[in-house]
Image (tube, rainbow, N blue to C red; front, side, top):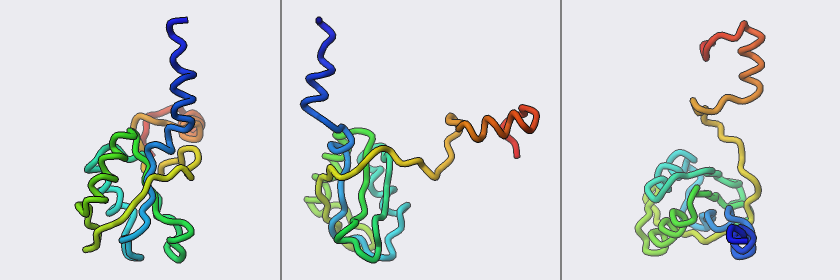
Length: 132
């Protein structure tokens, strides 16, 4: 019975992603790139996902950033509210978000992670290393 703390944590925080995601609700221009936003947010901690939303309708689908650690999201939000995060010359505005679903597949390749497609292709080519 001593290790049954997981259900209490799950009840306290039903979706940990919701605790670590912020929506950028102002300050991003149409020229702001995902990499600029991500680099700025990485000052506060590891970014799992950085999505630019709908540039033509940012009020309906604003840019959002999900951090690996909820504390990083809190730090970023505090700095944003204090006017300390400037992107493309504008102080951005943000709020906590609970609208985000499961993790998205990163477009950036990671050395340590090899997907099933890569494994299949390696095997079909004769099983060599990661060349191509």
